[in-house]
Length: 545
Ligand code: F6P
Image (cartoon, rainbow, N blue to C red):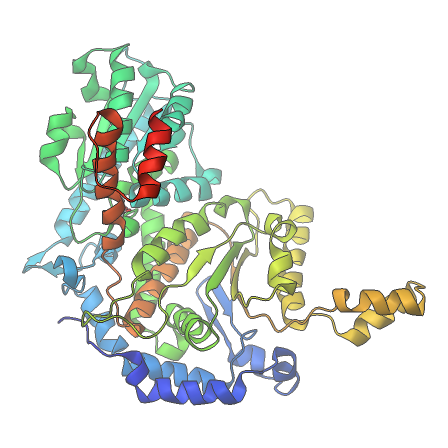
């Protein structure tokens, strides 16, 4: 069934939310807590090894109820059904959206065009297992008979960000293979990486859903050329693997059939790390850990499908984000993981969230008269505290922030972990409470400051507070919990797309730049002159001079 086409602003819930916002725009978090002892309990949720506290948000019970009504009135229940059952909800491309099938159970049945895709998913998973086991064990060897030491993932966007983020996040679980990621068409990127490699012991994985992406093909060709300086054409078969839906193009590139890992058009690039696109993850941490990652995601899928909306983590996070984006006028959201392992998490989510929900046309083809996709950014804490937190605390913008932390550290250094987590808790508390004039005054007085100094410093030292945060506390960073965490945000993306009445699974916006770049390349490399605006012409002339 296609997704419903409801302009959210026409629903009763939206109208009520608007009126409710007008009456409650000055809600103060500190007062909300002092007037309701049960608030923390009411607005938190424990599920498996995940604990979500969303009580530090500018909401009342009524706000929450109205947001849930909005989800109902925009057809979320049916949309979730259509999503999981493989209906072609990516309507502009006529495709199902089934990254969830990649982590479904072996006995599940998910039909695409009347055919159950699960057996095929599992046969590719088995191929990944056999391949990665043989590389990791050293049984599979390079052209001079040596075992592999390095793996290079060549891909961009969803064919790079997911594997790169997960390989970094699961570094603790890594085996001896060194993993590298080449993505940018900037030749300096690939040449810097080549400096670290030895052709005899390096395995290259070319990942491209379409196998037509300029960046990936250029990098793959440059690497192939470098490889052939040392080895023969026949050796490509043992050093190159490919992941794609485009088997024809892979054959043209010369990659041996046994090293080709298929994927399907019902897997969107930015949601593809669960497919063979995750081959370099499986190589880095072993198939068992890769399977745990998928199992964790499947757990979140089941939670999302079955939990009532008021107990449903992705639904709650999505609706809170709608509340700030559409009613409070917040434009950005920060995501701050308190673990260095998740240093690539926000960059990964930037593609997931902004490529999916960065749309301005609704499902009826009309320009939306309301805000859609939020701008996502973030870096791990505590580093980010010493970089941009000043603006979140005392700047003029409202930036709802997700704090993600873990009860246990991986290396078990209690002293460090306690300090890290003390910061984690302190920040959300400080963001909420701020510091009042009275507090600043008594602090400055206690420091022995004169009346005059005190009055001149006072305005700068006051923190308004009342900054909303979500706190996600997870037992431990494992392949499984990471899978769960990623799937949580994937479903948040889905819910927001449903509420905003947009198509979240295409990305036409990226196409225009690609087309223009290929025209301009011809002009750069020949005497051809294109039709450009005066600024672009001037820049091209300056570049070519
Ligand atoms: O940026 C546009 C995009 O199509 C992404 O959605 C995708 O992840 C990326 O390019 C790479 O595409 P491919 O895997 O086909 O090379």
